[in-house]
Length: 146
Image (tube, rainbow, N blue to C red; front, side):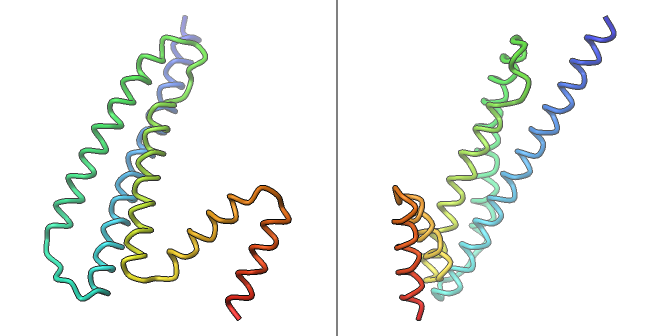
């Protein structure tokens, strides 16, 4: 009996650690988005107020609510022996990171930063069907640089 309780406890510890990392990643992604938003506002000579901080706090709480819903699905998944990781929390966090990543790219475009161009070029390279197409695109990018 102790063997099974030890296995369940170990499994729960790993799940809680993964969920904690997911929640920390959400906070970092939101703060990074706020940072790039404020930086873009400064670059465009817009007035900066304390509203972005309140908005970021609200966003973090809303994202936590969403992830908590996915954690409820993970708790239900504990009934199945093959469900050994908090897949729901990981998927929810990945969705939040994608949304915040797109927001960061938008802020970089608003700032007219060349870092936003990197994301566009990477997307174009990924869309290539063959390695030869990717090579041609990379060659074209290098020629534009010169």
